[in-house]
Amino acid sequence: MSLTRLHIDTFRNIVSAQLVLGEGVNLIYGQNGSGKTSLLEAIYFLGMGRSFRSHLSQRVIQYNEEQLTLFAELNNGHQQKDKIGLRRLRNGDIQVKMNGEKVKRLSTLADSLPIQVITPESFSLLFEGPKSRRQFIDWGAFHTDPHFYQAWVNVRRILKQRNQLLKSEASYSGIQVWDKELVKYAQLVTQIRTQYIDSLNEQLKGIIEEFLPRIDVKVSFTRGWDSKTEYAQLLESQYQRDLSIGYTISGPHKADLRLRVGTMPVQDALSRGQLKLLVCALRIAQGKLLKQQINKSSIYLVDDLPSELDAQHRKLLLQQLHDTGAQVFVTAIEPAAIVDSLGTPVSKMFQVEHGCVTQIE
Ligand SMILES: Nc1ncnc2c1ncn2[C@@H]1O[C@H](COP(=O)(O)OP(=O)(O)OP(=O)(O)O)[C@@H](O)[C@H]1O
Ligand SMILES: [Mg+2]
Image 1 (cartoon, helix red, strand yellow):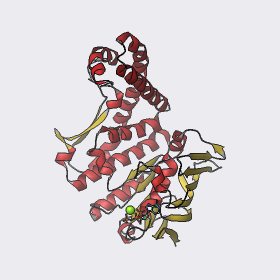
Image 2: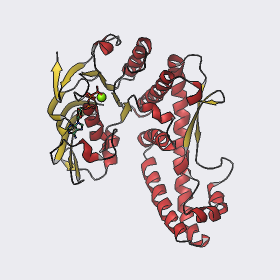
Image 3: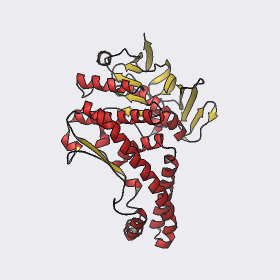
Image 4: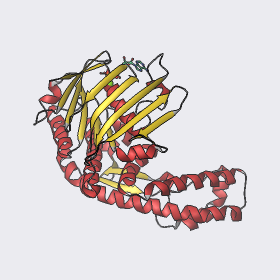
């Protein structure tokens, strides 16, 4: 799966770009502020309907413009390529079409475009709260199990309902009806997540051996409530506590990943560069697993790769990315930093200057 064409209009400082993309590594280079990250962000926006830099989507629309449009052609292995178009208006409206038909759910886009982002900020995955780690787990759960998305939507819907009842001080018998449903979907979500992390760990071993040799990194999944207690039982026993604070304390919405070296959290045991390599290893493992499990290739957006990685590790990372068979978009200020590290020639090279993107032969 790869993007073959990309059209960008009035997205950040890119006024208009029509690009023919390569299957392997696409190198995007240019000076600070030229628009490299904006180009990656446009690809992400097309796949996710939002930015990876700002939670305010209207920020990506070019100043003084009312809308942005994105269009891409996607090679999905079939004879007929998929055509995806997205328009985002300043008033918040978003219109998405796939092969001429209106797309109602953004998850349809995400399903067609499994995107992985590696940026200098990515290692916040290891430092921030559990939300970003849950998103990491759920990226894989969503792409590898067709039942996950609906089960997770149900969990969130029921939790919202339950929390409203708790705030209105409902009796436990009023809440119990919801708990039955909640338990059913919570178990399914947890089962899919657990299986996913088990498979991911298998993939991860080999990659970590290359990236962080002789460091014994352990990744474990915590489901969001005490591992010895049934969820139904827990919901009942914690009802008074939930009631006093007005929301459901425990459950799959509190799931997390624990990453350790021996008994120490990775943040205390590894250097900044090593933490970045660990995040890269996690993301590469996801891409490899997706390919292995359902033969779907990911698209990697790698921003500012050289930062804090030495030449040897840069090379290792690029080779691993290349080996996943994925389409890769990598930015750099100087193209030599990437060209010299990549054992094979880059597929396509683009120079960005003041928002203008030119393909370099
Ligand atoms: N909504 C917008 N409309 C127009 N220009 C914008 C908008 N948002 C940001 N910009 C400008 O777009 C330019 C490109 O930013 P971008 O982050 O893509 O640069 P970059 O090439 O990645 O730079 P660096 O090498 O410093 O990371 C910046 O000068 C920024 O001020
Ligand atoms: Mg940038």
